[in-house]
Length: 219
Image (cartoon, rainbow, N blue to C red; front, side, top):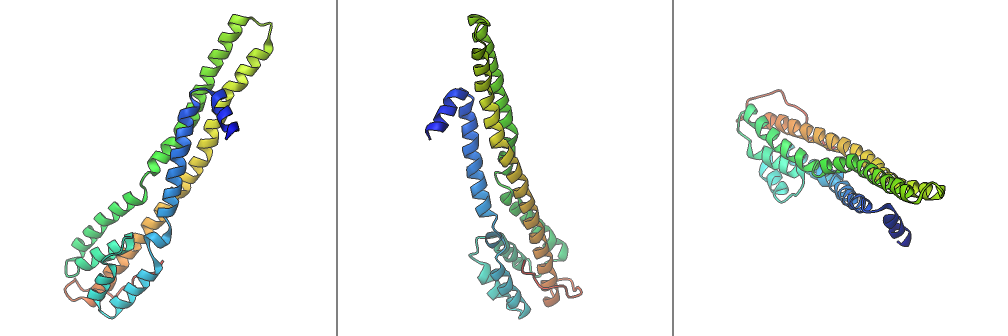
């Protein structure tokens, strides 16, 4: 802790917004890693149970099973069961609307994480430029008789650039990984909705008859 405080003091005022960026980035990364766990988005046990109930035409039991589910798969299946008896187009429109909402939730705060990854090195560069200005100003007043004064000032100024890069590089990498994770889960939810439509189409005469499709897949 003492070393960190010393670096902040030596780096100047720019170190404080860089530190704030690091704390916000850590909070977003931790929260999104927890929220994007597959077991929290598409629980395999739920999908298997719903698949079994739908295969036996127990739609009310399937709806009850998903009634209090606080995950994307439960909400998607619940919406699909509500649309039983509607045309395929209405079913697809409703599922697509819900899918967009779920995708927006899955990507919550990731845009802010990307901004932090982009802004942190710029803040570091700002701190370096400010430090260089101060260093050359000190040399201008003291003269060139003490080269160590300039070298020390430049070294101190570069601390902010290093700090900004230390925050930006892992934030950018993790941001891309989380975006990829969201894309994968969104695709799986789309497949879940499609399979649900085909399953209900095969078992409900009220929906436009279709060739029986696959059952809801457990991802």
